[in-house]
Image (cartoon, rainbow, N blue to C red; front, side):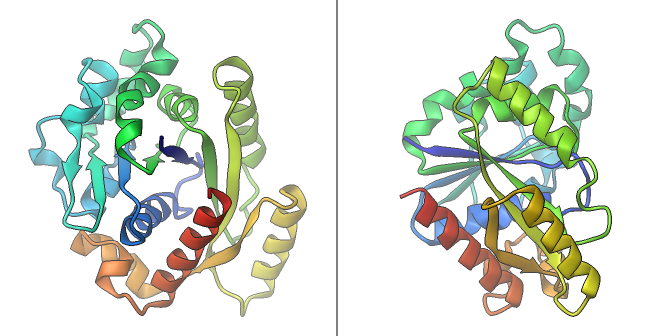
Length: 254
C-alpha cells in the first residue's frame, strides 16, 4: 500500500512543482515505484518529466470530470521507476464543473484507490489555489508537504492553507497529517533568509525538514529540458538537496 503525499501551497512561485517533480524522481531513483499526479492546470509537472500535455489522450481532467479510470491516464516516464498522470489545460474549468458532480470532494481519492497497491509513493502536485481540486488532493492524501519560499512574505497565506487542511481532516479525511514544511529558494548569505527560517520554525515546531532547497540556476533550467534535476545535473546543489530531502521522507515513512 502506497503513501500518498500532496504537495500544496496556494501561493505561486514557492517551488511547489519543482519539489513534486524532484521528490518523485528521487524516490524512483532510490528504488521506490512512484506515481506523480499532476492536477495543476499549468501542467508544469507533466512537462517537467518530458511530456507535451497538448498531445495527451487521457489526463487528470478526464479522471476528475469525465469518469476516466486512474490507470487509463498513467504514463511511464523515461526516468527510473517513475510514472505520471498528466495534467491538461482543461483543468482550469474543472473547479466549476466539479461543483455538479456527486461526492465531488472524493473523485480523485476514488480514482487513485485502485492504484495504491502498485506504487510505494504517490506524489500529487496541487494547483496554486484552495478550491475543489486541492480539496480532492487533500482528501486523497495521507499527508501534505508544504513548500515555503525563504522570502519576506513566506508566511502569508499559510494560516489559510492550514485552515483548509484542518477542515478537510475534520470533514473528509481524518488520517491527513502534515508531512513537513520544506524551505525552498534558500540563500544562507542573506539575513532575511535566517529571519524567515526562524519564523517558520516558530510557526511549525518540529515540522520543518532539516534539508533546505537552495536557489540554483540549474534547478531552474532543468524543467525546460523535461528532466528532473537528478537527471539533468546529478552533482548540482539542488540535486543533492532533493536527494537528502527524499532520504528524510523515507526515514520518516519506514
